[in-house]
Length: 415
Image 1 (cartoon, rainbow, N blue to C red):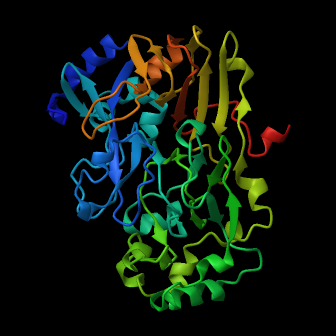
Image 2 (cartoon, one colour):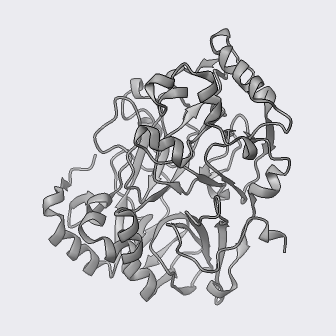
């Protein structure tokens, strides 16, 4: 277990400055593990087998690792810092959230800090043995009813973390065109009869390694069993619309947890939280499916930079992500217009003065050399990355809102 001292918010300033100086604008982050009581771990995110239930069996297995997160996990019986990323420096650590509060313009850029007063996004590895319930994440206007924020999200299926499919490598998304609100309402009315039949109204898509999806808020989806990299908005709201998954009961409380208490039995209200037009879209795949697009401007000399998450949600650029691959021995100057959270998924090397090493196995509480927060200061100045290993060095990095002027649109991979 980590024994490094946790530095309180009031004392972060001087240590943060030393960390930024030592890393030349790069911050070393430690692994952030999140359990889910209603899910079954997929066992592919490098956590040691002895530690899948490190929070206790009553909390459920650990099936998520969060990256560069200043967002708390909305779990029952949670630890106070659950979901929050820590910066490691000089045998001490402090939360990335406190760091952004202390030096926001340096870390995430003046414009983003002034608008959001926080790092408003996060990403995760989401790793399950089987499918999870058909659910949605509230739209911004609906989440505001309970003092929360909406949550659009995205998927990318890294080949490096998907050596096996696990139990069901298909994801139900949206509703079959022609589905009526009354049919969904009836599924909710049948909640306690066993399987409420919500999947009979949906369509499953086979998941393909090295591709992804953009999922707007208010859209139903039942993620399948490929390990998923998920850049998303900084919120943990959701509503489960499926009553039974692989024989396991889904409690009604997980349907209504982010809805006003007086609406917890109002079936019309619950159905109304769905973005109906997007759910019954006759061209759902065309409007939401992503394949990597090489960014020629960021590639060359043994480096290939690919867009893996792109496009807008309701016309807004909320998050995006890229995958950088360096050939053995290659050096590359990474220069981005904004901060990013980086996770190494293959190989070893260095980023600036920080080592990069893809771990084979991580014990709960151990610190690693695979995760970095690239501050706005470092990203805009440029950071040298070198592959010092014998295999490709591959890293995924995600960005916050309105960072890129040249962000591809959904469907541009066909051009």
